[in-house]
Amino acid sequence: MIGKRLFFIYSLPLLWESVINSKSLGRFLPERATMAEGNGCVEETPMMAGPPTQPNNWGFPGPPPPIYSCTLSPSLEAKAREELQEKPEWRLRDVQALRDMVLKEHPHLRTRLDDAFLLRFLRARKFDYDRALQLLLNYHASRRAWPEVFQDLRPLTVKHVLERGVLTVLPQPDSHGRYILCLRPGKWKQNDYPFVDNIRAIYLTLEKLIEAEQTQVNGLVILVDYSGVGLSQASNPGPFLAKKVVGILQDGFPIRIKAVNIINEPRIFKGIFAIIKPFLKEKMAERYVLHGSDMSSLHRTIPRSVLPEQYGGEAGPLDMGAWTQTLLDAEENFLVEFCQPEPVEEGMLPDSLLFDGEHGGGGAQGEDTFRSLRSQLYYCY
Image 1 (cartoon, rainbow, N blue to C red):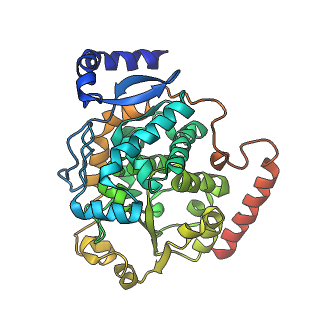
Image 2: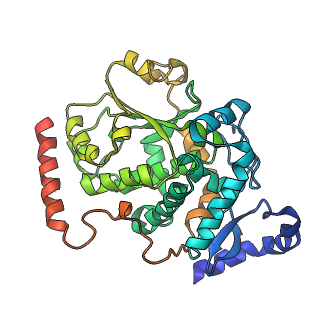
Image 3: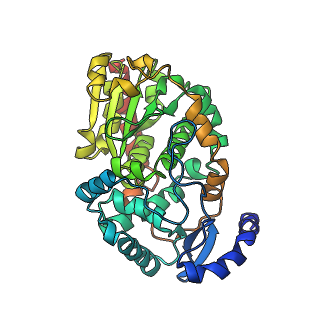
């Protein structure tokens, strides 16, 4: 009840302008995004506002303009047409088709329905309406299925993760225009804080990155440095947690992961990958590249010009503070996006997000699986 009151109070200053301008604009004002709730009615709620998509002081793209205006360059529009079946002349028609499907088939789903938001899901599924709708449902179902990650999800709650240097985003994209998410799991120690906080920080980072249309089209590259990873870090997530994370990345988030580069992996990585691989789709599994300590191998995948000195690059020392500040500056936006009550229609939870071990009958088998995998880790170690 308190959350709903705060939500209403937050929206009051914007309501009158919307009534005046919504008819003439055909869409809501910049400060709002369309939401579907109740019996198919449309409600206005604050959305993540910000300037047009342009690099900020740290080189990272800012949020898109609240009223959609395509920010893709001609070359990116051509790439989107070729790879994603996106036709600029039909773009808003396609968005409207997805919006109509949500309102008709899932009128109680509380979701943003503005053009920029829905485009993320269409692009992630190559403008296949049905698959884009399922991705949108999975996206919201994952929030409901995993409250430990998504409840009160905002940058200040994971500041300790960012300051530890567990993850960052390199300031410049690679030669294909893809930003590089750098993960350093060895920086996390089991006694520091719960492992789930790392997942919260990764999810916030993905949410911020996917705002940029260039990321929606080009995709994302992940670089994982396993320096310092020992048995305690490797065995902590377990198969159930691994399945949740992989399930969200593959089926519950509108991101295109184009490559996962692993460097400095120890012998124990065989055991780590044994936990992850069963949950990976074949196409995703093929995108894992193991480089070991051979930086020249990494440079054939990621150019030295965008890599920090630690990895034989030419972009200076690895700067952890820039991305931390980028996320912290977006605190209010995430507060609106993730810290409001979010009812989802009953029975909508997709099978892809019904995780093993969370429902009756799977517990004992899951424990046996975990013990077996942990034995593999000990053997590899």
